[in-house]
Image (cartoon, rainbow, N blue to C red):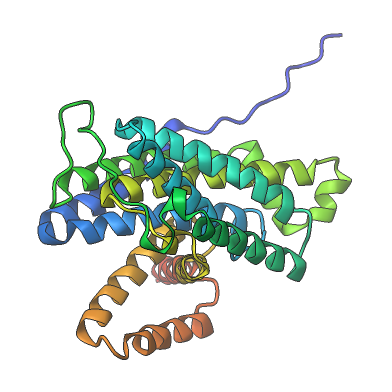
Length: 329
């Protein structure tokens, strides 16, 4: 008797393609209405890669980490060093940054994901601090506290040169983010991504059904490092300098705050949190340079109290209530 074929579940490509359109639309609105602040918008896009990569390990795997900026910073230094040594094609530099971030992510994941809870958090902080200390000590390579400068990428495809107004840098960053979001939207819905969600919900049950938990977490950390690496490379390419702040503990903590603000476990939460936090910080710090941190902290305190899961789940719950109310009329 013939055994019927096992049914497979396919995900429509249209869903992932549509997911990138809002990113492109919001970015183009920023390009049109804020043409004098494109350098700031490039910074937002670069940090969005870091926050999205953090979401992959925290929101989808439940891994506690406060050293994620190390992946971002190592990639930025790798791309910057390659550029100063003669590799100036932007896409090659992005590839180098992606590879450096992925390798660093695999190393970090192999250490961090062996533990759970508080030890995991401590190991992640130690890893980040170790990388930052190495970058500071190896000043003959990284420039130390002075930073790595002299990063001058060639025009994209030999046609589009990087300008002082960051037009080319912004379009490159925005298009890259759009493509990455579309790919990740499919990736997190793949069997691998769904299994990682299952590990986050109940890793013991995942082990009982035969899932290899540790290798999956390490691989996800590597994917996360690749995403962070793209952002780090873009940061080096568009700013022309890489400093120690790119892999500092403060950068890791800031990324975590942005993720919590938007909502972990949602790609849109990571993007929304990055935009809102950076824009609010930019406006408040310009209005009050001395007390802006207090003004930023108070709204975040309120959001954590009244929307602990982030803004995206809050909006979804509110929308569901409105729909139920309208359907009940």
